[in-house]
Image 1 (tube, rainbow, N blue to C red):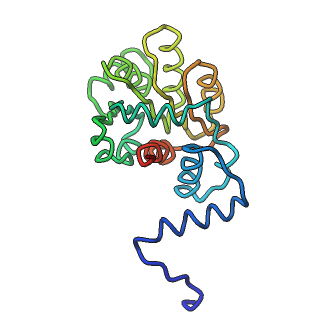
Image 2 (cartoon, rainbow, N blue to C red):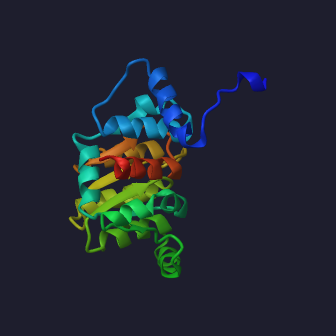
Image 3 (tube, rainbow, N blue to C red):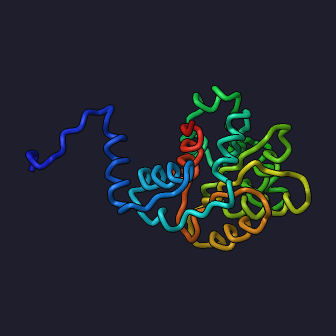
Length: 208
């Protein structure tokens, strides 16, 4: 079996993976930076469904790239997504990544108001005096609260990455954010996750 293994140097593994993904897309392409995002989502998940379910509002991916280059901050709904973002590259542009989920006062407020911590976290992000990209990879309630905050005029995100994964209100929350009138990148359906949200952020950070 060992003689069938492809010998690839460690520094070339990602490059070779992207070549395989491009080959298996059978000539399908997207304008950049959408193509980079699609390929990185497939690379992260080994799931070619992302070639079909990733939805971009008009110019959303480039809007995200431009915002990051201006020093926009990223607010996530999970520590996992926060951990996966390349904060060294983000800091080179003057940006930071925030996740308020483990803050004690967030938990207390959510309990008092009988809402989710994710919803409170979106409010904290909306209150930042910065240009904000919201990267949601877990909680549909985060998207629902963002939609409400946008309707209330309390926030105007540079971009929403709406990638919660699961079964309860996930599809509906994604569809809601696609009608909010702000730039979005959304994998339609039930798929997504914190790793996908972070991957989309990194794809934009790596795009020159």
